[in-house]
Amino acid sequence: MKFSIDHKSHVPLHIQAEELLRNLIKDPQYATKLLPNEVDMAKQLAISRTTLRQALNKLVYEGLLIRKKGIGTKVAEVSVSSKSNNWLSFSQEMQARGIPVKNFELHISWVHPDEQLAHFFDIGTDKKVLKLERLRGRTEGPFVYFISYFHPRVGLTGEEDFKRPLYEILEKDHSVVANLSKEEISAKVADKFISAKLEVEPGSALLFRKRFVYDQGDRPIEYNLGYYRADSFIYTVESRRD
Image (cartoon, rainbow, N blue to C red; front, side, top):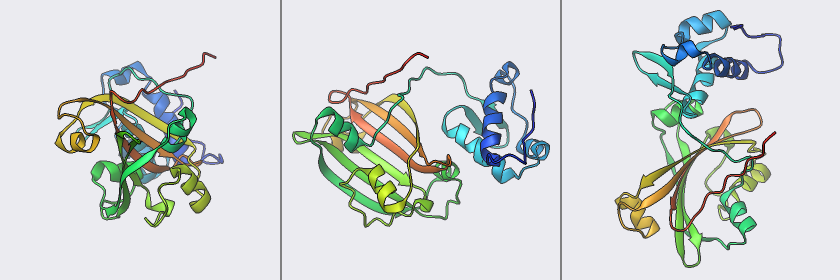
């Protein structure tokens, strides 16, 4: 495998590094051993560790790589997943289904990201990010609780009308186009906090969705967590065979 980067290419270095890593982790030898360390890879590719780490962080938060402090980076075990070819904001999803949306709660705050979120955004933990929490559903009652964090680069102030579709706000008000969404869907049980929000018994089954959203330059702009009542929401995946 060619382990190098084209420094004369118009493609950004971190994107080239990401594609190289995606190919590298397909190599069977890395199913049982650690990837080369960051210092060696950065030297071999003639890029900064910051640029390499940006590519590594993206694969870590997609669940393709696992990084352990003091040990190294390894390929994550393969898990079964499905992904949709089409994605919309929640408001647009509900509009497409003909379901009127009611906002039960909306909370905005500025918080310091934890280490994982800071890695995803590639910022320091001392840099505050906007946190948006929304409890939403039908008129009869809520069925989803969202927690979204936004990269400071996006320019959200917290004064926006978040009753509007989120990606419409980003595009029309801040010239940020959400171009790529990657999702992880799993099952969870409702803890005391979430069960109170969704009006279910603690321990009830939930559909849990993580959404990683990127702009047209493949830069992270949103990290979203969605907790759905399993008895009120069905997530549909549509795939087309080439």
